[in-house]
Image (cartoon, rainbow, N blue to C red; front, top):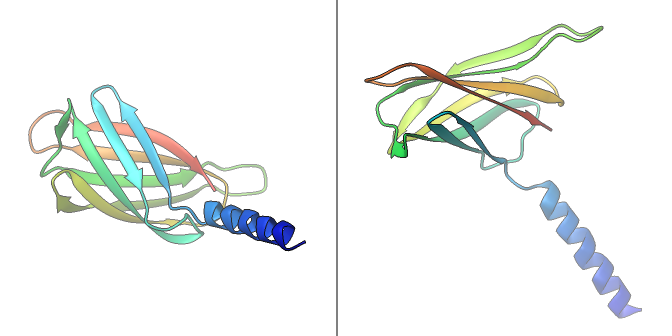
Length: 128
């Protein structure tokens, strides 16, 4: 009986830890790759993301980065959006905080304006 309880407790603990995992996702568009991460699981309200950006396999430095997170309108529900400018943390890492109004599938567009070169956009989505 004691072994069964130990196994059940270990199983319940592992499920709880998996549910509390931090957010982690990769997105890419042509020559731009972005690793999107968060130290905490996504929740409704304010969420802070770290964007690790490379272009043409080189770290993207000194760029202006902005993000738009949005959920299109659906029957009985208006569209929702949150826009924010990212803060340059150095070495290709940028931090941005956006407000996610409710759970569901959100579109996530990252707008990149490098110091030199063309502007670009990387699109992805997430669900929580």
